Length: 357
Image (cartoon, rainbow, N blue to C red):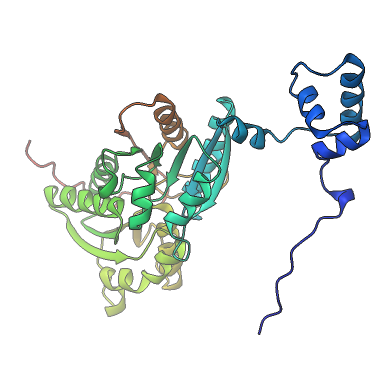
């Protein structure tokens, strides 16, 4: 059996001073300290001076969160995130900056395969957050749907779950338009066969893969689809065998010219590891694209020269916070994506003919 858990106690010399400590130092009641520190009438000038001196000597600072809770108001915004990918990190950075400029503080918590979204929502609502930013494209559990319908919520960088459409805000990139840009670029570079990754169980995965396949068909390109379990780099590695099979390399006849269309940068980088292990060169043998273009040093995509779609993390977060603060009717906001051309796609032949209008 595991050893019993013991309550962690913090030695008095290491914990921050409390209001009762100020009261003891000043020789007054805790209630009188509260009156002085909150600037209310009821204390004599001498007592007020003694309390303020005691607070300064102890280095006491008020617990602003507790004060907000007692007053029934809060400047806290809850953030629930799911992934560890570079784009999520960029969104979190942008959220911290945008919240600070608005005089808000963030409370972060995670949802995962072992921590249901409902539990994360409960964690935040207990702290009386003003609203919730949800950075996740995963389907919510039934309890989470009920909870999120009762608190101002904005889904960031993803689509609103079907059960919450019209009940929460959502701000995301125009995935379909961006993917069409990617396919048109690849066709213009002479690629004739595309291996398109579809992240199963995610609406964004369906939209991105569906738009890529539709545009490729309109341009007369051949498409092979590979299903992927998630948006992490490890998911790209696990899907590597299916990608190699789609490329034809396992049968000794690499289909040329081929490009792999990654549903995001992390997937593309995972697939890149597999291609290199199979002695396939990018872009000489196989083209490769991603989606996200995470900045701020979070991703090696730029350093590796990955052609990708730039998502405006800052703009998405700012729009989401503005929606929460507006108090208006929940709606969807769609921002454009921007194709970023780098070294993983190169001309391979004459461009595909432009379809008739």
